[in-house]
Image 1 (cartoon, one colour):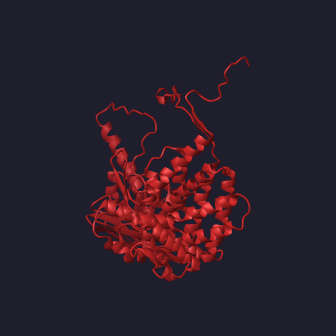
Image 2: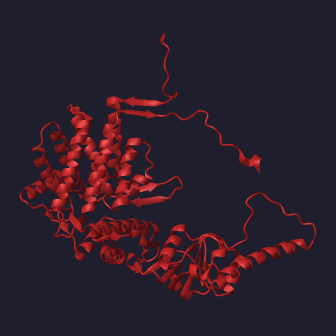
Image 3: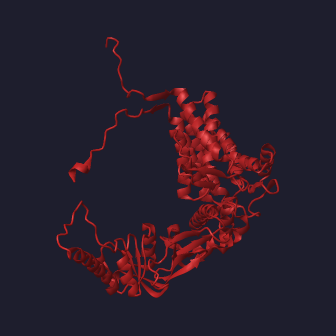
Length: 534
């Protein structure tokens, strides 16, 4: 080749390979895991996050923290994805999943320094994961209705609302049990049928469960009725206003009376649009887009309740609850397309109005109205309630629970070490390291509670070796106790999902031995200017 260099990558591309790439990825992932580790457990601390606009978020929810952190490193993003997946699948255990991922990578780093190849470590971790799931199924117990309240309270613990846990857990269990359906012989819970609205005024104790839908909206005209009984609801995805031209257009006024004629023509169009709604028999309108002032006047005169700028998700909930169709053209507003509800009412909540739609055609629709002293309180409460709804839902679906407080992890670690001794080959070392990694959960609970982590871990191991498989760490008493008797329980799926997702993420990071970061294009292609086409 005559010594001529061969250029494969674009100029400016950064590339790290081999041990350096592995070390860099592990370090980045562990740094993210450490960032959320202090939030774990009932004594965990909160994080304050601010965005470029100055908005402040205060939370100890792992998924929220990692989402708001705006992470750049690709390996660190995988840890954030673990927390997001955990949140989407089961609603709780996001911090546990992230911390466990970091600890698995820490253990893998030690093993690689001892000479183990990453593929051997991954093989051992996969063996441990499958065995851990088997063991979890073995130690899990069947759940009852009484357990549902305890699971909700456990999910709400450490969210700064301990004094209202009883009231909120009752709301959660009642709401979830109301949307349970039987499908192919198994129970299914659609949490989307439960809406959560919030109002940052009042007390947390003022929170309530509403059989229907609550919207943070008001009627669009003062003379409209405040209360509509036997509501026939038009759900519109189209505006009630004069349609604007999609391209640039001009109107030439050549005579003095033409302006008036033009305005009268617009008014006639709006009147016709309003008449279509009125003639359909609708006495309540929920519109995704705008409603013209003139249309509001005509509809108010006919006694129709109207609100606009309703979110698309709320339109979908209205459609599900009332049986009405989402109408995309005013020509489709017919009696058979309308939804039905017993009552549509605008009520004062705190210092503002909200709309309550109750007595819906589909009775399996519920809303939780959260109240709190400040906006930060209700925002944090909203996240906690979402977690509680999800964990109660998966418990009803699976019917299995395990002890919390680090009890399940300690029992798994003990049994995995026994399992490792039956293996031949180097995978045994990886399974042992997996067992050690699981103990990061009780260790972190102790550290966050200000207890001696080594003493607590030693005592927990001793209790489990004696056969007390439900022994977990009581952070209030500062000693291991039976978590089932202390009502600290978690759904089985929270644990299995955390173990699965953290093992997969750790394995993916360990497989990477080459990282190529592309440089920014010095001459990015400009988008074509479409203004010349007008």
